[in-house]
Image (cartoon, rainbow over all chains, first blue to last red):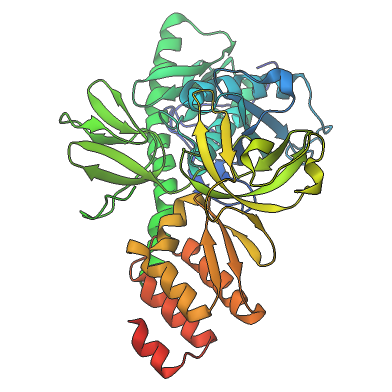
Length: 246
Length: 236
């Protein structure tokens, strides 16, 4: 958003630097149950983003003062590996990752049936292995698959995807160049069964019309992503049953 | 959990999937949104009379009253022990709920940290406070043997239809086996035989979704422990 470049982000044919059209997302890949020691886990690739998510719980909440006597809390930790970006990232929590942890926890709390587990905590760990813009969306997408994989009761699985603006065009699922040199980035996450929005942020400027159009595109993209999330979870068990019935 | 004999094609559902839109009532692990019943956990769709629910495939153990469970002592107080029973919360075991006469502050003489006990869940209240007892027939401190931990969702497979799987396991391996509702299983027997029993239990957990499980487990144990002729005949 801040940088300037002579790079043409969207050419005269409406194609972006990675060959996508404006309303095309990057290739998705989702796999559930990749870690043995966590209660639930998922691995997600969105374009060049590579994200691992692990879920533990519900378990007793520590520290004690965070306990809620009426419902469980969702504690999320978003962490970027130092090798996830081209300039080594200084490890440890920083302002950005604390913010992302908070918004992802809040988005997940909306779908998890927390009232079933008073005083407990559901811990979600998101590790960004490789970043290429849109890691908070990829992280949330992975986290919700990991939650379902852990068998935690929830209303729905949340997909997340960003819309944005670069070179004056409204685009779906920005990549790194479009994010860095574009005009706006709007990540959203929805509950697919009701189209409720559980996460919405905006960085940069767009007109009202551009914003509405971007949201429409992102919601459609989210639904596509949601199908893959469901598929990843179901695949885990259909594969097992096949192996078993030989 | 018991009534799933009417087994059509097993349909795997994930949270948010529509189970029914024609006016059936929501059963276990289901909720209603806009007149449609939806799943709230990943599992197998299960229809029973007029209700539709989900039998979970994964997930933590949540105790219900009447469950017989294994537990490990994790903390000692002057008048109670804290027991880990694999639930999200530790279960306090009060001195009045053990079969011994325990003086105040003398708790550690009877059970210490790391001891395994067989307990019964008395009650779980709405704030999910668990109370357990050791005052019932068969409930006791466990000595010897080994504890196998599997997912509580697979317990019904380990027991089998009217206990077919578990009785086969016991007969063929010559082990004493007790299954806790929390998925913790105690196996007691000769080392080699107990090894096979533990392996078989792990195998049941792994292959819980497949058909013909009892036969396959039988085959597996036969390979490991050659059975006597009469035993083999009498078993099936």
